[in-house]
Length: 151
Image (cartoon, rainbow, N blue to C red):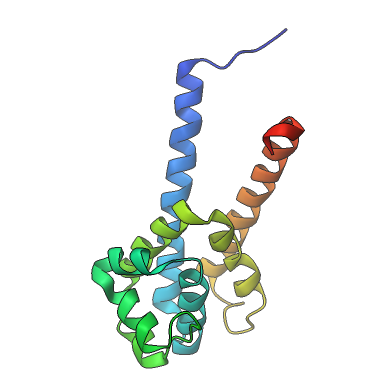
């Protein structure tokens, strides 16, 4: 039997994807909020790397542009003092923006967090890693289902 998705099913899949992206941003914000200062800097460096100047200025009232230019854009090194001035809500906004530009950059947080002994004990980090790995697996499975000309 050939199953063609209905409008409701397609809409449901889109909503699930959007909710997942929002949840990921909130989890990253929570991880950031409870991370030690050095880990906050590393997390910001990872998230800021794929962004251009215009994106840096547009996100969170330009706080990330100031940090990037102070740290020597494009060779990014976020100072601990700068990371302490960034709120979890700014990071949530940043993640939402980065997901639109490079989902792979956000997915790469899983490797970064898993490699950090400091973050290993964080329940929020463990949950975020699990969600990111699941999303990456789902995306790879979806890519395999596409014809080679569309990948």
